[in-house]
Each structure stands twice: as structure tokens, then as C-alpha cells.
Length: 307
Figure 1: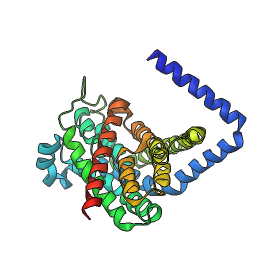
Figure 2 (figure 1 turned 180 degrees about the vertical axis):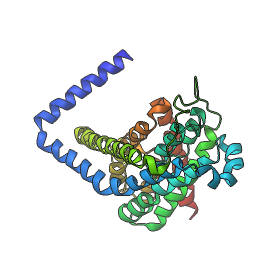
Figure 3 (figure 1 turned 60 degrees about the vertical axis):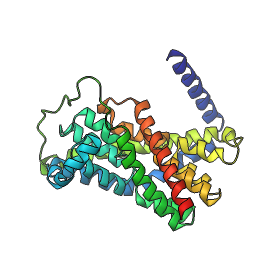
Figure 4 (figure 1 turned 90 degrees about the horizontal axis):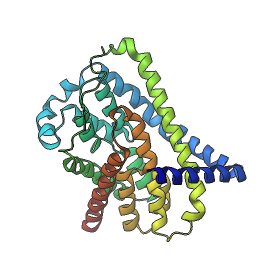
């Protein structure tokens, strides 16, 4: 661990030197990151963050999800509320699912073990990005976008089965479970405040990873044509999908499917800022997302060949 920390420190020092030597390029990269956050992420995600917090605080999730309680308990070892989180994560996209899991845990409605299990299938991208941005805009193929979305949804459901037996170590109950949750009318200001903080954290992470990719671009340019989009996608999802779109449709679709399922380290860190009170190891969440990416890519390959 000490050697790893030393290595990371050296890399960060090199990054600082690169920024100092070529500040104009990195300022442009930072502004591109801020622009991507302000025009693509903020308007799509921020309203969902506040609305879902209000719904959870009103205590109505359990009532709406009662029909799903038994099947989700049998399949995933989670309460019926996980069905609500899953559907909202599919609708709203990254990282709303993780934020909702955290909200349920912090309000004492689920324990850490359930939160861990839910994280394996409730962290998803939405149709606006998958079908609209990747399918129609990048691949210029709406049918491919539909296949990517179907693969993504199925991969999440199958991925949850892989981790249905996982258990959190130590005390699985939230230490703040006995804190009185205020009605939405009284705590609305707090909900907006925490949502603003969360979305600002997301913006900071996006901006930082745009700078990282810019710093790595000379090295990424040395990679073969098929490998470079994958390497960029492992770091930042959107950049990887943009590069992958230049490949033949089948290869581009399978690669984008994997990257969307995995989410990229940028998205993973966004989710981890939401899940910090769960004390979930970053490596565990990364493994969950990696397996979802592999499952999604496999489903996409089968569907593309079958159609």
C-alpha cells in the first residue's frame, strides 16, 4: 500500500508539472469538463435528486413497492424498495441510483448489506444517454441504441443475481437510524442543500477526469485503434463512447455496451461520493460495475448477431 501511495503521489506531481507547463491546454480541458457537467449532467440529474429525496422522506416508497417485495427478496435478498430504486436509476441515469440507495440507508429503511446488494443492480445509465446520445448521435443508429439500452437493463438484473449473497462486514445498521426523519415540508431546504453539494461533487469529479484524460492523451494516442477507446472509456465514459463510435457498428456497439455498464472510473467515483456512509470499498463497487459491463457486452454481441 505504501508503494502504491508513493506511485500515485509521483503521478500527481507529474500532473501538476504538466499543468504548469501547458496551462492553456489544461484550462481548456477543465472548461470542457465544466461545460459537459453544466449542460448535460446538471439539468438531467439535479431535479431527480431532489424529487427522489422527497419521495423517500414521505415514507411512501414501501407502499408503492409492496407488490415487488416478494420477488425482489427472493431474487436479490433486498426489500421491495429496491424495485423503486432500480426503475428510477434506469430512468434518471448515473449516479441517481447510488444517491437513492444512500438516502434509503441514511433514513434507516435498509441496512448496509441490502445497500451493498442494491448497488450491484441499481447503478445504471438512462435512456437519454444510451439511446439518444450513444445510439442516435454517436452511432447514428437508433436500433443499436435500443439494443444497448435493453442489454444495459438486462445486465443490471443479471448482475444483481451474482451479488445476491454478498454481506457487509461489521454492524450493518445505520448508526444514525434512530434520528427522526422530518417531513418533506420541513426538510426541503436540507434536501436541496445536500443535492446541491452532491451535484457539485459530481461536477468536480467530471472536471478532474477531463484534465486526467488530457494529460494522458499523448500516451493514449500510442495505443492501437481498438484499444484507445476502451482505455478512455475506463477513465471517462463519454469520451470513450465518442472514440468508439468511429469503429464498425458491431465493434462500436459491443465496446460502448461494456463501457456504459462499467461506467468508467469517473462515474464510479461520483457514485462513491454518494455511498460514502456505506463504507463500501471502492474495489468492490468497481468489480460490481466491471462484471455488469462484461454481461452487458455479451448480451449486446448476441443481440447484434441475432438481429
